[in-house]
Length: 160
Image (tube, rainbow, N blue to C red):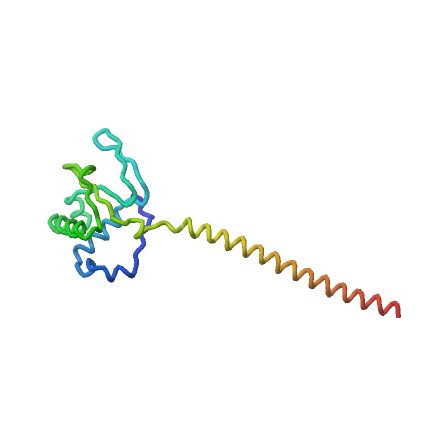
């Protein structure tokens, strides 16, 4: 897993009823951190398996090791999160060796707005460059106008 990646964390999380259940909240945050931010292929028992965005594979024993919770606490937290429709356990992709979990509404929690920001930034930069060019043209025009006025005055004085 990429250790340099990050997850978004919203203040509205404080309003989530799970926030007041420390063990469950800790397990949910673990799930968010473990979930793939993009689809990934793995080989399991000689077969290719795709782990979708917002999903990951784990086992209760591994979760307990990673979180510092007991196996029973991980199992209980998982059940609570499933009942609240915050995570979903795949009965098709899970095996006796691992559990395939998916964060429900993962894109709401972790949508990628870099693309939106890049487009907005490009538009802003283009507009800024255009306005900078216009301002530069105005300055040049003013300078030329001042020079022309000075030249006209000088030429008028020579006529007089």
